[in-house]
Image (cartoon, rainbow, N blue to C red; front, side, top):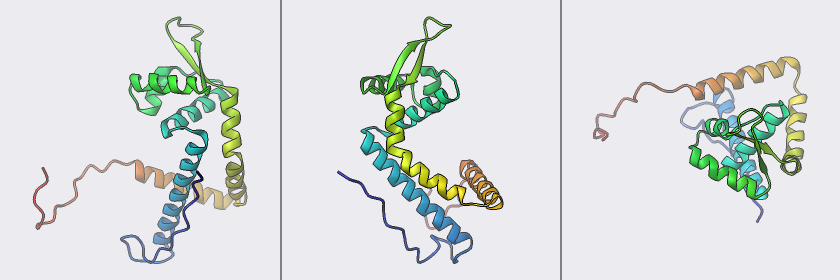
Length: 179
């Protein structure tokens, strides 16, 4: 079964904001990119026969190995925000499919180190390599100034999304109280 990318969206308006190309156009383009990226992740999960958490774990292990760091199950659990029981199930699943091996910790006999297998690295590269190359080509086409603007913008957008709203939205007088 092949999952294709959704067609680009034609935005007749600015979501709930009025406007055209300026801020609303940027937000629409960002939303379209996020939709395309989500579709790509679904295709990747389908191709590799993995769930989202499996892919996130594998990516983290591959990045750690590239940086020369060892990862314990506890660290992986914290990184993924899942329980130790869920982490054990995840590791069992990845080990069973040949994506991860457990090794003894070099200093703590009670602990384990997790490593992504060479085959996993090759499979990820084969699955995502061309797409990553296309993305890098687009990024390489930016001038230094354009790249700085994009990095600054995306960093500020990440901060805006990460910020937790501490206020409750005002309730409409016609709506019953929540709860």
